[in-house]
Amino acid sequence: MARTPGQAARRDPDWEGVRLHVVSGKGGTGKTTVAAALALALAAQGHRTLLIEVEGRQGIAELFGIAALPYEERRIASVTPAQLGLPAQDGAAAAGGEVHALAIDTEQALLEYLDMFYKLGRAGKALQKVGFVDFATTIAPGVRDVLLTGKACEAARRKGPDGRRRYDAVVMDAPPTGRITRFLNVNSEVAGLARIGPIHSQAQAVMRVLKSAETAVHLVTLLEEMPVQETVDGFAELHEAGLPVGGVLVNMVRPPVLDAAAVAAVDGDHREEVALALGEAGLGGRSRKPETVRAAVEPLLDPLLDQAREHAERVELERARRADLQQLKLPTYELPLLGGGVDLGGLYRLAGELKRQGAA
Image (cartoon, rainbow, N blue to C red; front, side, top):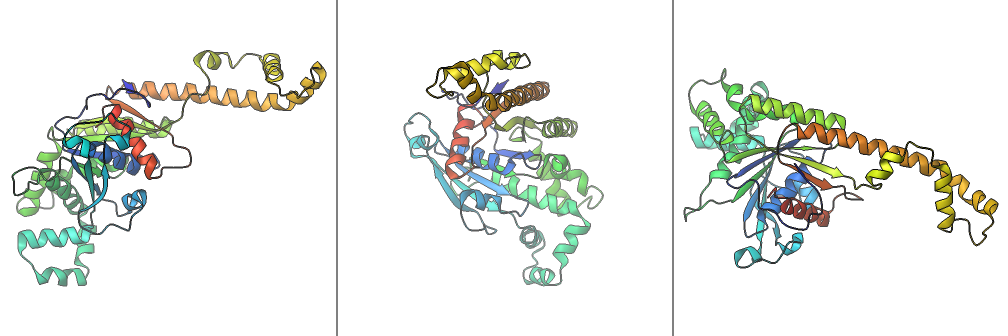
């Protein structure tokens, strides 16, 4: 069942126990924006989250209005329940939490990996200079995915000196839905490449995390035919691969302009009714003469009726797409379309919506 924008009461979170939230979606659905909003929502009650980017686009830095992120974890935002429009909290929750971010650099991650398992030291720098890193990740793209997913899984399970988890949750802004299953199913990618050794062991360790109850793969979509179809296909592929599917996050939902009765009636001949309503609203000026009023409102009738028909068609199409998503039987959340794009304030607003609807 879909949770809709603007619900007043905050629901209990649907994903208790999940530490790694993988966010995917068709290009253009606002996947990075939703991932960032989810990271804020998860941090709001005194928690620390890590937001990871794996595609090298620096989308996180752009969203938060900061300089390009280096290959290191750093704090990029703090968030309190009050900033998300949520009721006041007591204790640590009232103080809020933190969002940290990491833009994974494949080259640096591979050198880090080689140093960790093979103690290459300076030799790793030499490999970098001769172009070995690009060569290795080009001929064996599965290795690249092992490195990217491995970094996220390590962060999700990392513990500090006090024995507590370093991060309460990790959110990965992952590749698009069309290749998310292959990206996550790294075990099959490296099966023919390394049947034994550190790379094989790393892949196996990553798959144990990705297929555990600590991971959820969320799919971002729009109420449009192609994004919904890609979401349905992505769900089927993830399910077949045994990867844990989380929720569906419907982004950029436009508010209804006409009520159900108006939508149902839009196909009728309402020209005279609309003309009368416009005249009663004063669009004919001070004159009360019928011919004067009609002359004033006549140019408005066709554009208004056309817009009403277009809106009714969109509402019907969106209703059909919602029905398609309901067939998946997954928790579904709806985020509103924000006019003028998403600035930092809008990002916090979306985070509040996710929190109220139980996504975090």
